Amino acid sequence: MNFDMLGNKTVDFKGVRTVNVKSTGHEKTRFTVVLGCIADGTKLKPMVIFKRKTKPKITFPPGVLVHFHEKGWMDENGVKLWIENIWNRRPGGMRKERSLLVWDMFRSHITANSKTRLARNNTDIAVIPGGLTSVLQPLDVSLNKPFKDNARAQWNEWMMNGEKSFTKNGAMRGASLDVLCEFVIKAWDNVNVENKI
Image 1 (cartoon, helix red, strand yellow):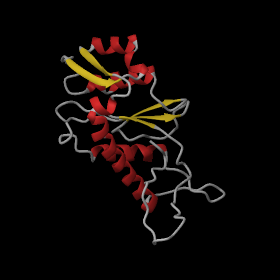
Image 2: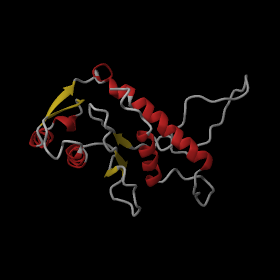
Image 3: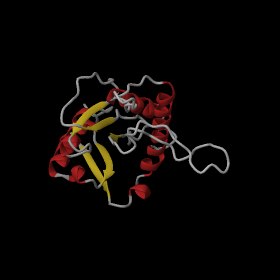
Image 4: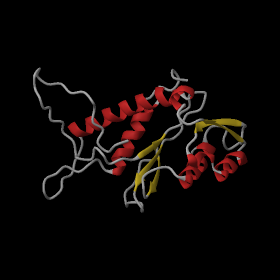
């Protein structure tokens, strides 16, 4: 996801050659969001990964697991945190009920350590081969798109009415990390999983 979630459509007068779109200048600054749900429609807590080496001194909302990585993406340590703090705490996870986790062929998903952690919790895995996610994992399409649309709506609302801060030169700063987490929580809450599974 991008810090600035610009849409790909605008409205202006016919014949106008340039349409200016207001942003904070962070269209290319990215962060990672990890989403999951179980077969009965229960949505798992989202995980957000920011590109940082250290945790900032701010309070994050409780509805999201926040992780920091120097490149801003999921690695084996991030998978470990996700398994321990989200997957193992899902309904039935503490009782180690036998389950199947379907995910893609991302390198950190298929390491021996990841497989061992899941096996300890009585979880089998099904790995979707590379390039076939959109075919074999329809939730990737049917949940991610509404989630991103909802997140964009949250960002648009913040751009119009949210509290902002500015640099000494008057440039608008991007949404703070805790505000981005609020976008993620609200966007995920607004996705109707039951009709998608």
